Length: 279
Image 1: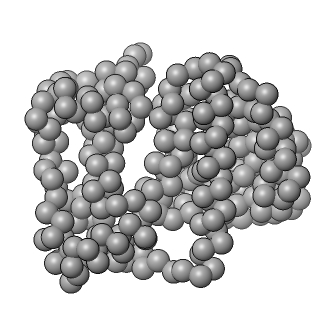
Image 2: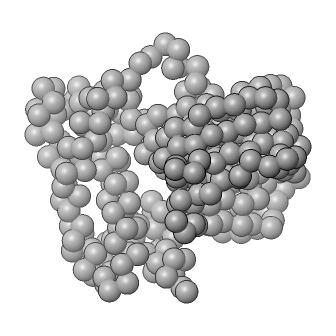
């Protein structure tokens, strides 16, 4: 299968504290084939696997079967190899970063090579958290590099809080999957939250609180994010006009869609389309 990279980000500017060097979303990632010696990076990296599976191994002898929702931590000068096997595939979002700020995190063992893989659920929520960390600030320059640096620290902090909470709270993934399916059933219109709550045998207030706790976002926010995901998918169809996409997704017009799209994704629909259909 061909490797397709989406929404790559690269900023040469940084700050004295560090920077996000590069980030991207990859479909059908080949990973890194097993090699001797293993690959060494000069940077830190996060690789979040959203679909598929494979294997991860590092120079310390840690070996792990990768499934959707697994987050790989890569460390400077720590050999590693990862990726799907011969009969596997996976999709990923990654962030590569550097700087003395993260060296301090490592010295304090907040970032530790002894914990190279964590599992984060739900995948949709964490995928969008990774995406918002980098692409919600598309501007380049030292001042914006610092903003991204702060957002990356917040993402890391939330990941570690989540990891600790998993020892105390268990999410009912079957219930959450059913709730998500009901919210995604009609992306072309505003959902009837009372009706969805009733279908799940709950009041709206109870549904909203439980969904927000388990999914990490409110039902309304989740529905909006899925509408934007669908808009991204439709934008990759060359013969679909922006007006047609807006009507298909229940927006009043293409201007309303464009405004909402840029708020969520960080670039205009036209800019997003040009990233993929420029060749």
